[in-house]
Length: 397
Ligand code: AMP
Image (cartoon, rainbow, N blue to C red; front, side, top):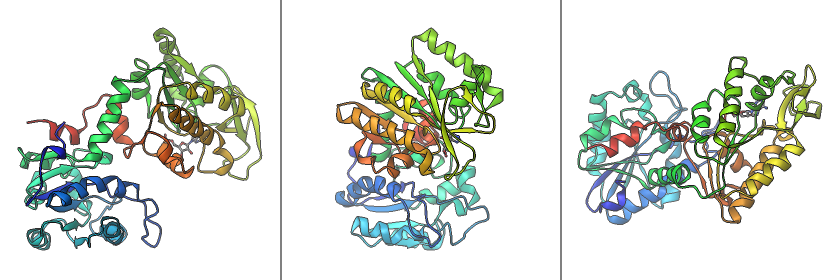
């Protein structure tokens, strides 16, 4: 793997693609700085070597060019505090000001460019735009795992302008090696926990995992498609009616491959999609009409926890219920606790990004699992076996 450990940045200007797309509150304050802290080791190594750093990122999904809400200037102060260096800012990612500021940059200094997605060319993967960005630095570093599955100008296309000077940052390196470790070198038993709303989003990953895992736990909204396919009553629970046969096929495939597939035995049900709704517990397949399953039930918690606690490798992607509402977070919290317990007993636990990472963070358990990925879609695609454009661009000659 071509990582920044293979180069000394002394006297060089490193152009780093980071993912600083952090959530902001209505006043523009950062509400979760994980993505920024995740990029610090790479930035610090370059500064320590005696190099200068130019950071480029996207923020939000701006539709029509520049706007205040999606400006990266919201991260300047916090980033400066974290680095102990006053970060310079260019209020355009290309053009005269960016060029001048990049040229004037001295070793040890850090320049942050304005939101790349203020240009449509970024997401289109425009080569001219990528070339203008490339002119700002001597070395290209990609440390934006969260967008590595996109063939954008700054994540992939730009690499062609640095044929002998393109590297993965530490975050990319860690993400890739942890995903590899779980997929190709898992200590057994290996348990995958899949949850979230839809089975259709995760079907490719589930199919691939059936060749690798010992146990496959399925919870969350997607479990009701399986319950319905088995002929059960699911009330008004989430379901993908066009995926019933697929669910049955997956059950059969698991059997054929000797994978233990665990589905919920019981469910916390509610008479409304609401934190204050009336709740009850129902066995799987026995949910009354007009009630919906919003969490796994107590028997299921016991079953899943035992399997998880006896695992040596754990991959978790997707919550067990509507964890955003406190009434329905119990199952997800119990699974998180079981993952933590297994980890403290020596298991390797990888938490997929997105909602599972948000859940673990909500429970204050991020430091108690082995690794929380910063990539939702990117990790999913990588684990499905797809070649990520951001990874390919660095690897190819
Ligand atoms: P995903 O983005 O597919 O990983 O799904 C995550 C979302 O699934 C979260 O916002 C959860 O609230 C939601 N979810 C989990 N379990 C259920 C359920 N039983 N019914 C409805 N939504 C659910």
